[in-house]
Length: 136
Image (cartoon, rainbow, N blue to C red; front, side, top):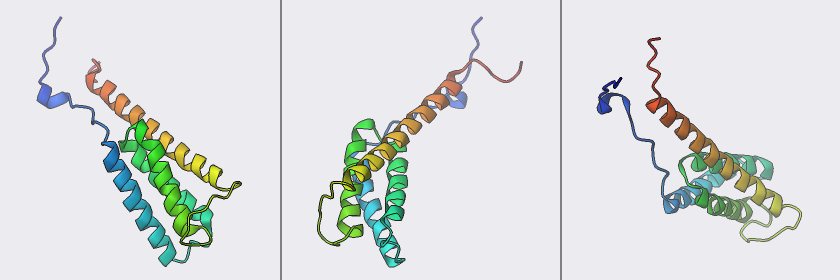
């Protein structure tokens, strides 16, 4: 038996991921704003707090982004964290014990956010086309 449904009423399109340049722009602007706010609050002496805040930003950007945007997002967040939050302030350096961990943390956050976004969108799409209508 065929059941007719109005498309405008029940079926909605799954949102497309945001283009990678927009995600990277958001990562740069968001990380800059976040590091600036943390600096104004005097919280940059603890780089763990800045790393956690930037990881949350990377995960939130990942929810709307593509997988190919995750490495660039992590790199931009790490650069601003390294440039403004780590000592000496104002120069990018590579500390062999610290920076690989920071990069891995930021990349993992971006990938987890992207995976969570894809799963949530796929689950919402499945519910939209599911034959279950709640009547029985």
